[in-house]
Image (cartoon, rainbow over all chains, first blue to last red; front, side, top):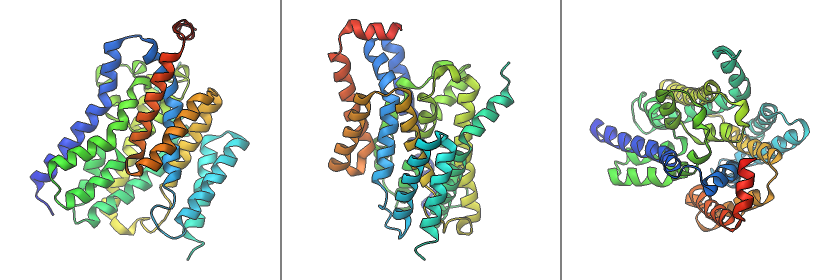
Length: 110
Length: 234
């Protein structure tokens, strides 16, 4: 194991950078106050950000190369989307999709 | 009257499945960390202090290999720069108290942003935002602790645990679009994501968020000022 000083320094710098990145936009917002641009970004960003994160997760399906996992996740996506159109209950949609994903990924291939 | 316990109960009812998913992912992280020869406490320590899942997985390998501090810092900067786009629309103004605001900024991970920024601000309170963030934080750190202590005996053979987060972002996208069916925003985001996936799959999220933000700035600039202001006042 690398020495504790190195681990502490690496962790401290990673924490400092992460917190700074999270804090910067709040500082910017206070600086520019109310501008049409900031208002518009605040209104449009939430939908786009979750859409990008969802696309990222879906695009990574199968990337682990673990047999069965990709298939399970694809089936889980289909079930989650279907359940959410059907019942509009976020917890239900996630649980149903996750159960289908886990069953297919862990039971079927072996 | 809104009391603290009912806020916690409301948040738990809405997000327990995400807590479970983060707990399971945390176990995987703990197992990964001890698997690299680190002591059991490093995983919960990293998870409690950084609270940034994806970059933690990357850093474990770098730390084990003794990567230079500059490389660790640069990797963290690149992977976590997507957080630059969250603060503009995160309802920090609803969080009461300096220390609580500070914690809220510290604990602003992807899931915390996604679970709050798309909700109607009228349904959010200082307590519900903080419980949402603390629940995610505690789940992730406790999962890492469990994985670090119990190691490979715990769930680590289970495949597909990360799917809960995939499902979460899909559901939140569908809810956000239903709430505010802005085809241009959704189209720009998906277009940016596809371009980023093709051009730079290794830094897909950061590139996609940047392209998306540039497109939104262009859209905002091209809109008639009167129209934008009118929307803002309404």
